[in-house]
Image (cartoon, rainbow, N blue to C red):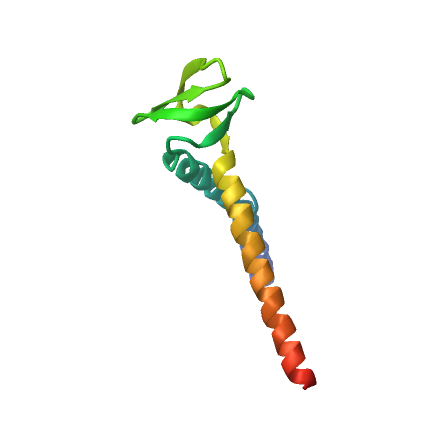
Length: 124
């Protein structure tokens, strides 16, 4: 009888451990990356400035002319067509993306130069 009770308790304990493990996996694989992405998107939308080139969720491209609390006004063509949009409709800020790519390229070039200088110093 005692063996039966300990076997049952062991089985239940492993079930609880498996459930906790599955919850941890779901958190680290699904919930946490999604919340990081949302935070990054919100940060991008809050940092929109006049003159930025943006693309909306609907695919409209334009230049930001005016920024309000929760709205932006963009100019979509050389005919000066202006649209007022909600900030949440912005999909990407191309001005920031280009600046980030340029910064990453400079950092990569600096690392390559440092590595080459180290290699040249080692060879001498």
